[in-house]
Each structure stands twice: as structure tokens, then as C-alpha cells.
Length: 346
Image (cartoon, rainbow, N blue to C red):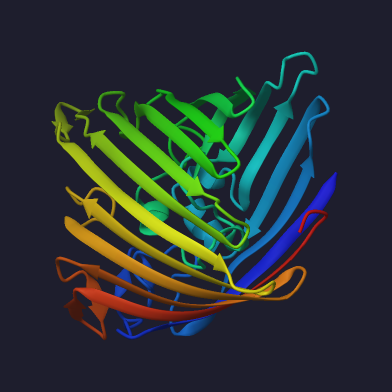
């Protein structure tokens, strides 16, 4: 069994200087809309991780143990502490005569999105708006993948839903995935659909996620990521009455990123996004958001890198906290991060 891990820490400065007397979603003094590096004006542990992995031969297993802000936010919606401190835990089966078919059962990260939870495997340090507000973190259930040609792999997932181990409505979510890989580009397409409203199977949530990764050379890569989601609210019976409505909530966004390897140890990345939370379903406020991030990366040694990042978010409404009580329409931050990691495949 292969053993690997990482430690990811950072310091972030927010020009708005949000006060620790202002609580935002239960957390004080934060960079709003951020994930994992959301604590500001202080040193913080984004993530500590330990991974155990055995590739299927034909049976395998994978476990990711995580601590820090990443664990808190990923498992925030999990009830009864089920799966706490666990990002992934699944067993795999890859029958030798099944032409590449692989089956996984357990808790696994979503197939949607252009970024992942581990910062070292992303181009930017902070996660995109689409990663944080348009897609799920993980699923629990069964997933499959199978190559259907030399360039395309298809998959089907049957899971409990978005970011949960157990469900209150009893319905399953179905995911369909496709990965089309060529030497100069990769196109990923994912679709999830299923009931996500509490205590009722009425009202479905749908997500279309697609990413086009361009790899024209070893020194320059780029991607375009688009997400469209909708959730139809359900009506829940409570005693002799009912709550809820049948409102159809929408959200969508697009992200562009370009990554240049300047030298063997230095890289630059720029990212721009547009995200429209049409009904306030994702962020809690009906708004249109834009975001730009510039990231400088320096690799000190194999298994140790640092990143310096400037990011600006702005909205068409006064959404961001400034000082003790003011609200403004923009937020600028600077973050410095160090990530150390080890394992057989660094």
C-alpha cells in the first residue's frame, strides 16, 4: 500500500479588514466566497492529509484522511459526524477480463469541476467560484468507468446525492461522466441529476459541468470550465401544514485560466471567472460575481513549493464585509502559501 501526504499552510491579508466581530456563515474574519484558505489576517492550516492507496489488482482500496479548514468545509453538511476527517474512503474492483471496467464503492470526490481539493494539484492557490459554489465536493455510493475507445472513457455513478453520507429523502442521484483525451487537449463532461431537497423526493437538482483543457506544449496550458445548475424547491409536509415552494433556482458560471511554466522552478497562472447566482441559491444573495486571480509559484525542491497570490472579487451588489459593519461591492486579498508533500509519486 502506497503512503503519501501533505501539509498546506498560508497567511492571507484582506484589504477590507473584515472584523472578527462580524460572523459570516458561522465563521469570523474570513475571505468571503473562498474555500480552504478563507481565514484572513492570520496564519492558518488549510489542510493536512494522509493518503493510503492500493491500486486494484483486481481489488484495491483508497483512503484520504484530512484535517484543517479543508476538512471542516468539505464535511460541513455531514450529519452525525459520519465520515468526519475522511475525504475519501472507497474500495475498487477491476476484473482482469472486463476490458478496463473499474467499479468503486464508498465516499469519493466529485467528477465535476476543473480543480480539486489538494492545492498542489491546481494552478492557483485559492479555489475558483465555480469550485466553491457551483458543484459538490463529494458523493457516497457506486461509480463506474470504462474505456470505450483509445481516447474516450465513460462512466455511470449512482450516489446518495451532494455532500452527504446518508439522505433524508431516500432518493438517489445519477451521474454520467465522459473523458475524451487527445495529445493536445482533454474534454471532460459531467451530468448529475437527482432529488436534493430535505425530507421530500419532489424537486430535482441538475448540474451540467464541462471543462476543456488545452495542452499545446509542456510550458503552456489553459482551460475553460463551464457550469450550469438548477434546483427545483420541494414542498415538505409538516404536521397538518406544509413548507417550501416550487421555485426553480438557477446558477451558472464560466472560468478561464492560463498556466505558463517560466522556468523549471517557476510558474505563473491567471484566472478569470463570471458567476451568476440568479436566485441566491448558492451564495445566499442574488448577485453577479466576477473574480480575477494571479498566482506565482516557486518550487524549492521536490515535494516543497510556495505560492504568492493576488485575488480580487467583485459583485453587482454590496456583499463583502469591510471593517466592523460596512458592506462594499469588492474584496482584494494577498496570500502566501507553503505546501509540503511526500509520496511515491510526487
